[in-house]
Length: 111
Length: 115
Image (cartoon, rainbow over all chains, first blue to last red; front, side, top):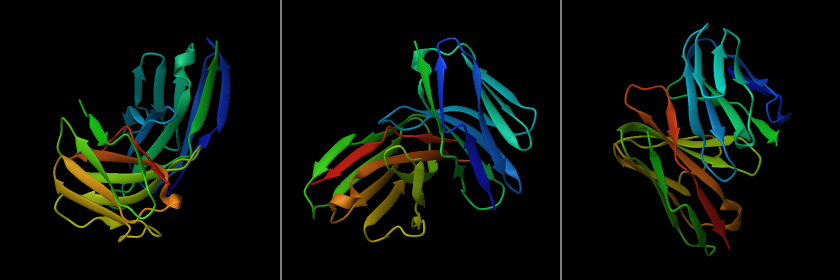
């Protein structure tokens, strides 16, 4: 069964304290893995799409990596404005327009 | 690029009335649009997938007659909550998928409160 698991559920960091969020997935084949950021009361904001193992993408303090089993979202020297829920989703090769979302990691960065 | 809008952002209605929510892809053509519902502190729950010019595909447990979806053009999909009741109060979010693309882009969401 296709599955996505994100960990930890919640994370509190001090400003400047780097860390990583994990997205583990089980799919028969991967068409794409997606990272989004969601602020309270808003729709998810697109961050990255990764397609194959070994791929990495960066944007400001964020860096996403992908292996055959999991993806990491590395946050370097986070700031309070990075506080949000980070969602991971995968699109398997099976199923038309099928996307599987994780339950997210709630990140709080303290000043 | 890849901007999706939703209107209204917030709506309050009386029980028994119908509410229409619009989802537009502003700078790309979206063959496929998705409608989600999100409860507080929970992840996204897919309600239905709509393809332009076709009937929407609803997820198990979602009432087709209650949540009417129309995807009449490559840039517009609408969700109508018919005969709304307080239990329909929620945060509704749409997303759009460009033709031949893999990444969904989300709208800002619509907060529905049914009194």
